[in-house]
Image 1 (cartoon, rainbow, N blue to C red):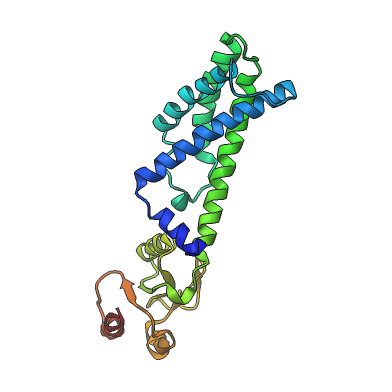
Image 2 (tube, rainbow, N blue to C red):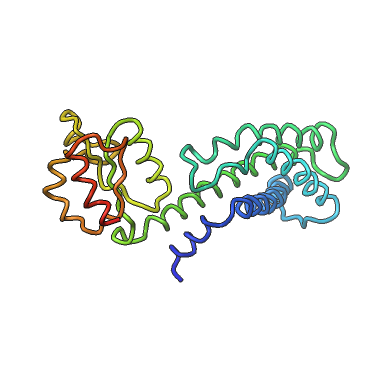
Length: 238
């Protein structure tokens, strides 16, 4: 089993399993952030025992409920299109406020007050790096699959609906959009988000180049003889 197969199985895990995995990872990162915060404050590695365990427990008790309530675990790595750190800002600011109130303002005996400031900053950095790294690794592994093995899709219509469909197919990475077909001569030959727009008549003449085409999707139902003739061979290949 190669790395692509492992990545493909990971992204196909049930949503709840992936969310629980993220919770466990964040809990580990929180503990590591406390450990490193102690090193930054005391300039020596301190075992997470004794009074230090209060800093770890306080972090877990505050962080995980806040993250769950504020939707940190709703986005999945695979579909996050914006920067992976964006959705962490508000939850971690709230967590930092709560954690600093407990360990800096109120103070816990035996726990340095600066831990309440250093630990949330480190936790934000760790969580952001893990999410960005995981998304990059998974996408890289999924994209490494040979292009010939991916079902190829042709979309009839380069309008809004067709573009939305192309974006959805591209984000799932289980099929490859080969191009748009459109009767609009102004669009033919152009490229939309890196996908070329072809004329229906021209595609009929060169369709033999991609005999492995398995799907042909379009919007809306056929309304011309050209569309009907074009879709018939696609249906036979499906």
